[in-house]
Length: 285
Image 1 (cartoon, rainbow, N blue to C red):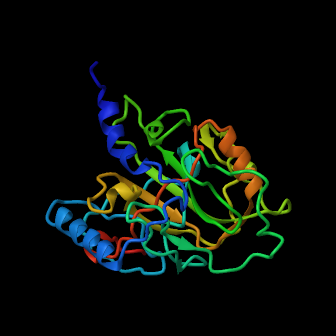
Image 2 (cartoon, one colour):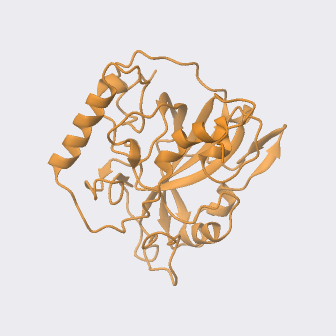
């Protein structure tokens, strides 16, 4: 069966969406393993023309990547195409600077955690498993980074980042509105169902309840993420908006969303190593 051009390009985006749910792995690799991954990333991208990469420390403004691209429009002038989340914040900065550890070297058990604390009541275990389709699932106190992905392509929101592409436009501009959240067993906390509501507004598919009270988003030029890019560069250009403050979200509403959403998301995704190489980072203005 012949593959369409869209399928081939979608494959480039779908690589980082490999599921590595939660902290399901008990393996913790050494610092030497992570250092070797960083070395291979540098070797595999040197002189290859890769643009700036993600994730990064949003409090570190410097970068030496010379490849520039036009920033995508405001997300309100684009179509929401996908919502998914990673366990452990992929970005570092703001209220999420606590390192979770090296994890298994493949995206599980790593990333950055909420620097604050929850009450004993908020940390009470849930009655059932949460978003556990491909791992042990989520528990109160977990930090997640939610990606609201937008595209200039004329599409409808759907599963995987392939939904952000169109056969009619093979190189749409992409923007990710990122919000780090900490999960609490608390009915008074923000509902994830509300945050992930999708509707059409002014002709665009939107998630109208993306938080606006979690600090001024840090905007920068980067790429797609995910652990499959630990040792190679992502070729996709993405305009990022990362909010520096953490939202406290009712974990039970996250569980409800994982049971039924138009994106077929039922688990957390793994985390790419934080990009430190200045040659792979843009300047944050």
